Length: 418
Ligand SMILES: [Zn+2]
Image 1 (cartoon, helix red, strand yellow):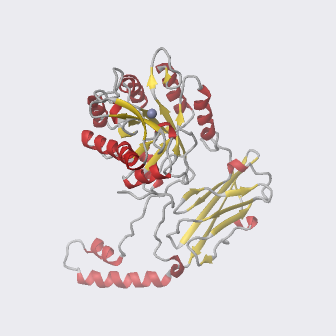
Image 2: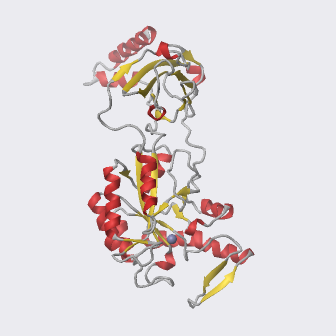
């Protein structure tokens, strides 16, 4: 510390003399003495969770409960998200978070609409605007008005253009909305729009599936002048071969209808969405419950500070480690009965991390998977014991030589982007 201060002074003095005639020598000198700043990504919360909802038609009178709900129920659900402290984010924000480029709140929801119905434009969108919620539309191109499968209730290209102009995310849901796996009988639309049922195999299948996965993407991109990077698989029916075609086409994320909270490690080629149907109200309620029950929130209990030495922390307070990927540990057994859901481990440069807690031994541990960039690292561990919140802070050093270039690595599942 002392040495660094001295050498910095020498540099400042030298530069000060050299730049004496210039009107503003001080800032110039400081710039010269400071090494070029390293470009760092924002700290993202790797414990954040997102539930993705998939809606279809909004109608006043439900006749097909598998794909319809009433506007009133939809609006009520949107309000519930707000009331439960769940932040509605755009799908692109979720992807940016997974790339480590943007942080998102701890509990989020994404709203998506499938198939392209007029009511999504006329009824759902105005409701979402009231709440200020973003949305994503998954469109199958032949189902848009004017297409071979676009009926009177289909959304039009003009409506999609209006949505695009107002920030709505428009993504792909194939050309004709069918099971994409080889060997299934599919409905083939001829040039004269004649429909025939056919079991496609070999080259004929490959040509068909290319059009479903890639041709539809190109059409959306050309017709609307957008970039499409998400693919919703009809009925969730696909396989490795279809995934490969989608990846090669530049899709960054693929979605199914098997709802589950999206986490830092969810596979990008199988992100589950909760399909909301009129006859299954529990799906929405359960989805909300899975992520709304985690700890936190305003007005918490008083905090009691605990000394790091009492918790046998590793790396020890004030020590220096050689690795930028240390194992972080603490033993909370002396604090008392700990509520496992309340344990939170924060690391400078990383934020809240998904640490594991063993209630039997009281040991909290986290293996750092993203190189720590700073020479010193602060750890903040908090937990609840009864109605008392305990918190401990400690700091350790990282040996510069061992830390390397400090290149941040994202999750291994991140697909290639075109
Ligand atoms: Zn669909």
